[in-house]
Length: 620
View 1 (cartoon, rainbow, N blue to C red):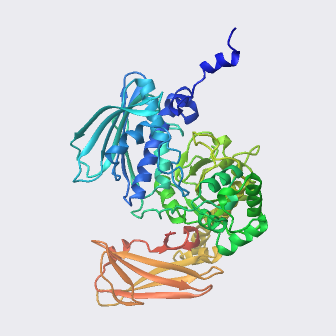
View 2 (spheres, rainbow, N blue to C red):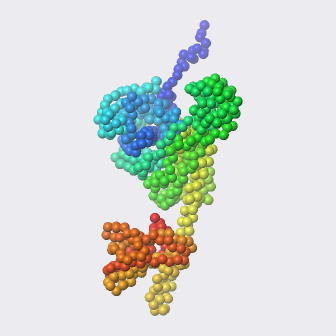
């Protein structure tokens, strides 16, 4: 009698390792094209380096060297100055998928699954046949361990091809070298250069050096020596727990009573809250949690939503901060305007998160293109799947015309602008394992919209002011063309010198008038008066700079003097009410007519040039 078909089928059924699965489905992890495979590898290695340095409170110094190896392959070398990896852990960290230290930790970090760098090792061995070469050192007094590793995909275990000690000049750190089928591209958004540029903006404490295949070296210098505030690990919040997870926690807890189980297994549940939850669920606080069945666990889960429980703590997050986002954008873009904001922390499904946004406008950015959207999650740039990301959807949903940007046909606006959006969370809800886009979570989308609108209002005020200043410029140009001709004709008619038209221009324009008058004092010296009159309708606060190649005497009021080498910068801090005037007086021991004619223009610091007549102006 033939065996039943089910028994025959059972003979061919067997389990597969996670390494075997990703061996055949590598596109899930971001290895679906030659350029993207390189970016994915660099991303995972840089993420690991940054996380390791920050956890050890070391300012990151990362070197990335890319070389061509034949027609289709490249060699990637990444070195860092992190704490290094102990010898026993090196093979598992680099050659075992789903091996890591952050998967169970509820706090903000770049990598969590433990797939990243080992997936790059797997891809490298599949496409080049070469092992990964690792050097790691944990202290200057300890040896540097050198490994050559491959992954046994049948068992998801590391295969050690070489294990020896080498000389390495770094006091501590890690170096990985991989050869793989990949391509290095330039001049597009989805490139290594753009990825590192974006990384440098949101990690201003890091120095990253890139050596390109042609030998060109690019250094992304750190903008601050201030380390990010470390994120603390927290307990799970009741609002983010599902029934199956709760049942597992009940089954394996070390607590013998339900009330202590609630207090020590979840965040923001104290003694009184635990009692309320037990009462709402109809369960005895003294009940053994191991004895709860499915229905009782369901009642407990329902009680979580009935009882008012405080939001989870937010010290598990480490936002970049408005000032550092500003510095990052200022360092990498030449623009006219930057505004930033960090929202207050919010919660989705029990997971705390915070949204940060920066906007940069004008300068050397392209005017006719769509704005550039820079997306980040836990300080990591997201270069792919922009159209499928909640960040993009939130930006598209805003009516940009009211903020001064064109939005032809809806969607992404156009104009010389860059919008940076950073989502930081203990559990960023990515749309896939490749971690390229954030899922459409309503709470996250709302926070992004509010943050983008906040900085956009600041941009709108800036653009409105610029438009007003532009009209003033046009008006002043016309006045300065007409008045000199009128003054010249009047001077000819009356047979007098051509008058100074600056006071008239200042009065018509409602400007601040600044004038320097130099008169001989009869002793080979001169007396100088700097007269300032405010023709505007509001009080003006500013500084007057008189930068001259000599020392002044008897100054009233006394200036702050800055020695500039061959010149002296005399600085007066002033505040002038509408319609009021102020005078600065000083004398110079010796000054001839030739020197007087070569005196440099006065400088007004703190006002737009359109608001000042008679002197140069710098906004400061």
